[in-house]
Length: 280
Image (cartoon, rainbow, N blue to C red):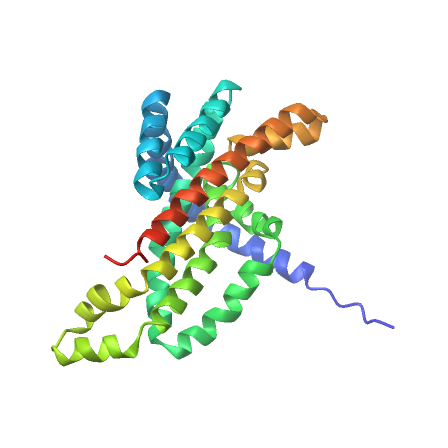
């Protein structure tokens, strides 16, 4: 009934050719990214005393939410992670999430700005982002592993690919929803295109962009278990080890730690998004 068609051999052949031609260059880029970005951020966070880091989280939470009970609960949750011996792995996970989120912001916001200004670019990007968001995350690991090998860098690349589409979409949405009257008023004062972007459209689109950053952060955090399969250390490593060895307690403990970290990051970033909506 069905013809025997398969693209597996073609894909394998093309990917092998790409690895042979560009594999060394990709690995060199990965080494630079590891040495200049990932490891310094992780070492910096590791060097901060746990007590000081908890104080910084408390200050950030209070500045964002102005809720004393929420601030106490967030700090208490992170303290409990350290109390069960997972503080170092928490920092490793947070380092990966932080760097991947920053890279997603560096890529996503400029691409979103360009896409909001160009209908042709949006037509090209929309199907690409649909594929990026619907393709199972495990599929990213195959080419990334072949090009970059095992370790933190392929985990970072896979996380960025998985997490950047929501930021692009919400940046475009926010810029498109800017009130045309505000643009016309700014144009009447003779603003330049750069001033229009930085002083009018981006500030008005900030709530949507902040929501995109929040979604990107959550999706990056959702990749930590998958990233542990290709050599990224952290809380996901304990979850994976718990699954492989049927150590339910170890896996559940690390899973709860991931949930606590996700709640803290989500609530603080959401609070900053809402704060931008409050009238002054």
